[in-house]
Length: 225
Image (cartoon, rainbow, N blue to C red; front, side):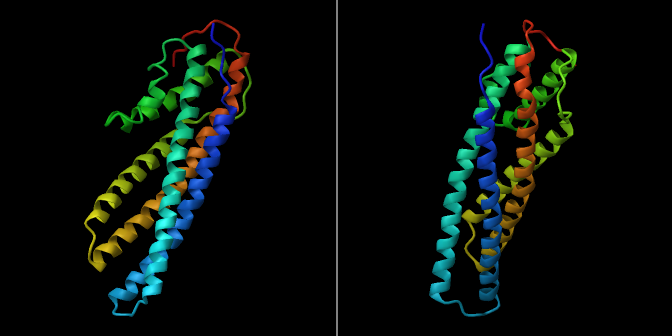
């Protein structure tokens, strides 16, 4: 019979990368404001030196590259933690809604990725809580699914905002269009702040109780909600 696999380090890795992304979100907001101010100067007929324009472009490019790298690694570390958590729960609870591979695959399937990752995360919370309560294993916190709702709402909002910014920026040529793109980018970065904080809470809340599954000694069973 398979045994639970350690997931504590994966949780820590995911949380660390989200903190890094959060820091870069704040840095991007500050950089975006400087860009906005520069564009406003140009729109109002002010002069902009070539040095200022070049330094601004370089700053934006560096932050964008760092953000992209951190974001991709953050996504990878989160999915690694998420899949391992669902794998472990499969060992203790029969007949979960999806095979454990969907904890990773559901993020990449169009349309399915709008709801299935949330359903799997909610199942993690609900089934783990129900199992621990049934086995009379004490745990701190309540694994509130209301937190998951807010987390997923901000995830969807951030995803849609990112798509809008990307598509609009492709055709932005005039100063007014560049100004709009900058404002939209700042808005997207602002959304990323509560999203990051909620994602950290979601991981921490579940990681704090996942280790208690080791205390469930019985054969895997079905938990009905």
